[in-house]
Image (cartoon, rainbow, N blue to C red; front, side):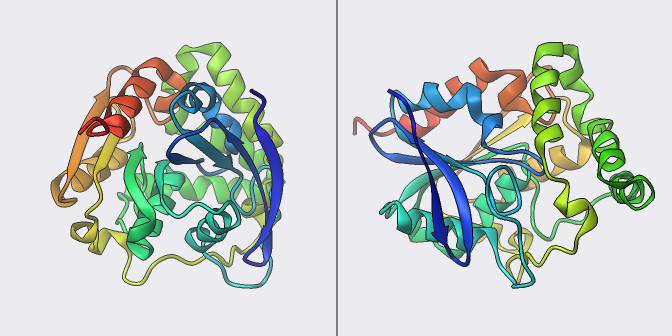
Amino acid sequence: MRPHQDFAAVNGTRLYYEVSGSGQPLVLIHGFTLDLRMWDDQFAALARTFQVIRYDMRGFGQSAMPTSESYTHADDLKALLGHLRVDQAHLVGLSKGGAIALDFTLAYPQRVKKLVLIDSVLGGYSWSPEATARQQLIWQAASQGGIAAAKAAWLAHPYFVPIRRQPAVAARLAHIVADYSGWHFVNRDTEHGLTPPASQRLRDIHVPTLVIVGEEDLPDVGRIADLLHQQVPNVQKVVVPAVGHMANMEAPDLVNTALLQFLTEGDAQ
């Protein structure tokens, strides 16, 4: 069945989304500089069991760019679910998408059935000096050479070293980044997060949670996975061997198996 594709005019923006399948709603939230295509290996596979919703966040993919008005991605997601008449959903987020899924769960816990965080970042986490310096290089490249230079520096980030062992998968990632507008590299984003941040509120997350992390992801991301595993009350953790930051693209079969096992757990009870 062909996915339903449309735009939702919600929360002062315009979000592109796709829906496929039937069953319990499940939302896929992409990472920074990416868009909903990063979930191609999950979308159809999960739609055999769930009503799968994937969308481009504000500022990414086919969705509208941010404006001078303050916003949160969590509120955008709430508005999108309202547009789709979804009261409660499973959330699956990778990297920045994981941070947004966490913020949404803390802000609207009654709207989340289960939570999956893949190679997630975390609002309020104190990054190591090495990671901070490496990130600053991206914005330095943008200021000196523009968006193209920033994209090149971003794809050279250690996040993406492991994926290069799979040239076809790395090419898919590079294609998505090439299509990214680069808006965030050259504009001030008016997005804001939770206060206090999620890093200080992990014990308040009471929905069943699965943490998935690539064995070769950066040390900071591994430490975030450990924090989540230690502090979220109802949590499981899966380490995907021999992959890095893009675990869902690098090892889709392993990730899909973990997702389906976790998300259907208890359904027969």
